[in-house]
Image (cartoon, rainbow, N blue to C red; front, side, top):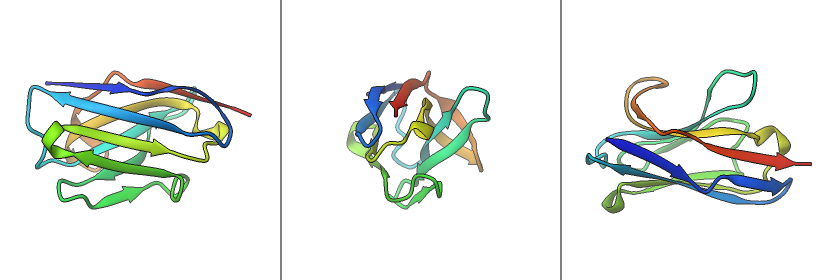
Amino acid sequence: VQLVESGGGLVQAGGSLSLSCVASGGDFSRNSMGWYRQAPGKQREAVATIRSGGVTNYADSVKGRLTISRDNAKNTMFLQMNSLKPEDTAVYYCAAVQIAPGKYVYWGQGTQVTVTS
């Protein structure tokens, strides 16, 4: 099983980025998936999660700016990030198969998002 993120990069404040996470080696259509992030010197935090049926949940800090979605047929999850802020700078990880709050079986390697002011 492998999760591969892509789409990170450098963007100015107010800009947008779109992250993708492609899952291979398994069918995750019936499992919850999520995006997490970790900034330097900080603990990893949940950004957004999405259940198999499409129910979503967001951290308060990103509500209205970031949108999580998934394409079960393609085993792919997305994170559309708009109105980015410097405090969104972090390594973003995708995760699949939730077994407990914040705990997932599979994790990607992460993709760097840097937002400049």
